Image (cartoon, rainbow, N blue to C red; front, top):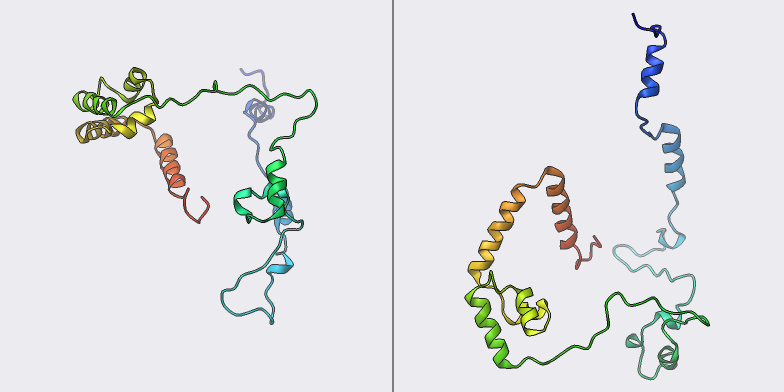
Amino acid sequence: MSLLTPHLRPALRQALAPFTPARYESTTRRMTKKLRLPPAASFRLDASSPAGTHIIYNPPPTAASVKQTPALFMAANDPRRALSLNTPSLPLAEGQELPPPVRKPYEKKYHLKPEDFAKIRELRKADPVTNTRKALAEQFGCSPFFIGMVAEATKEHKIEMHFKQKKMMKRWGRIRTKARAEKAKRKAGWGGADGL
């Protein structure tokens, strides 16, 4: 026989159940009411507004700072140009130091000659599996990005890598597949006007 009386069992079950937060009707209504803002006065159309498509002039509440306007966008004889060039980009207080750089500063080397380019292309074409961009970059003392610019992988190697990637993608679950599809969609909108 159970020690708990029948009327205590539901209370115990409720106490042992994991807590799941929920937004109730009262808070939802309150939040949507606060977010329901009227449009700005300059965006309202009235009888005097032109019909069809037109430009709405809605200037910022304050004038732009000289520090915000790059010298590239100023005319050559603009007096603000001298101010922007003389102003330090990051004013530091007395005794304040910048954090250390993420990567050690280095000088770019321009040491490779056309013969080296030919050698890189030859090695990459002969065996792209062994002579990867990283391996060739270490061998010739340059970046993998530069190796990719000098010697692109062969079409056969690209096709092989594509099939390897497809094989790997078949093992992905539903969540990762969906996340990658959303990432590709966002990346497609990077250069567009939609702002995604």
